[in-house]
Image (tube, rainbow, N blue to C red; front, side):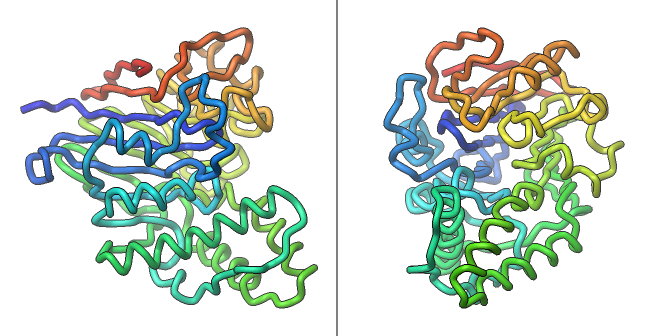
Length: 328
């Protein structure tokens, strides 16, 4: 039987969208399929398609797979969550995993008409609305919603396990209290102040997952930056393949943290225009100086790098730390 797993990072510009396909005869078509985040749903993100970027749902419609067994949302930000709505409309997942209590969405108001003053506030408000809509839609279609907590070790399919490294239950409770305070706020100025503050903290409420497939370890920290690892056991961070946190921005990594992870390969999900200083040259140089091979979901140009246009970056994962990559 084929024992090769595929992990694909779709080129959704500034954002993240991943597809994992793991051979298991118990699942449709002989593959367990997991989606982690869905990129942006803003049309403007895909107006410039020279680098090969495309909406996540368009990639699924064109290249497959034809079903989703598990959908995961690492955190509530527009460039990670909002592309999951059209993906779920295309292929309703059997299960949906995220950080908030599985019934939290049911008590969220629609948030229509709430004021914003900046583009970033508008993005975050849209992500909150879309999170509510996504959960309502999934529940109505029979998807099982589940909350993940640090310390859980879950068998996903044959040969593949998932260890949840963050957030802790304490951190999730903190997030829910802050989110409830925001949702209950009636005064416009106070609402905007709380919205901005929570937006700034949301990255470090990300799900941090360690996947292990037949001895090959893959660390996926969502948008966690270097300050978000304080609750994790640094001895559990070692990985063969690492997806950089926070799009490879300056705050994504430190030399000490990189030493704890010591990856053979690292993926940076930065846009071709290196928006918000993503794929920061100092960060990329830090990985390269350590001898880590760096890959990109889009086509940024740190330190003079030139990549061919591509729709996705696909890893073929084998056992015992072996993997290969190609742009497609």
